[in-house]
Image (tube, rainbow, N blue to C red):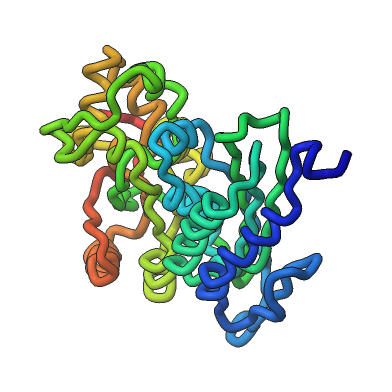
Length: 339
């Protein structure tokens, strides 16, 4: 018996690396040293203009959204979700992502499928000016079904210590600006799958309200906010940022606040996407639970001084965003007031 008979195809691993090579190399930015195949990814820091460099790290996966990729046999966007979940998080400290590494565990190494997954990772990195400098593919027969896999990622960013975003700087009168999401992103899919009976329903069914099939809507990649936020941080004294992920408004917005303020959110200002209306209606979910689970159409919020609102919106619009005010900071014990 050899390793291949035990279920691990080393040759398939070599082929997967060759197939993903072009995707990976397109992400190589200044600072990348070496290439694929080493035991570690090398990155040389450019500290020009940074007085007190601080590294900020983030890690995450994609969760059960992967089930949608399996069912539709579509694997070229799920990697972008993984990148977004990591790089969007480090932005909240004011950091610019530098590099990314991925980990893909498969039941059976099908090189073409692995290459598709990595192409999505590379696309996410390229859109974030972040280098994909390494990764790992593990073939784990008998642990994962041969048609299933898991993916996780890890990113490192950099910020000057004096420019780290601190919620202590949030004060009464500050305005809360929303950046729209692209859909459900990568959170709440355990609930979504139950509501739509994923696995039994027709994912190819066209929904007029969505303007696309349910399957296409749910696989829409998580939006990347790196370029607009990095540009904003260069020009505006941003007080705080929150990435709206699992836990929705109620869990994530307070993470951007100090103990003496409340985020007052105007529900009628939130531009709720059609998919969330469909989820609420189909699952008979209360408004409170919707805002406590999903992003509701808001993928990220930035808190700025009232005098910086117009400038902030102008900069974000110049970066292709459609920002709008959804609330303000008022006095109170840390939390949100959804009114």
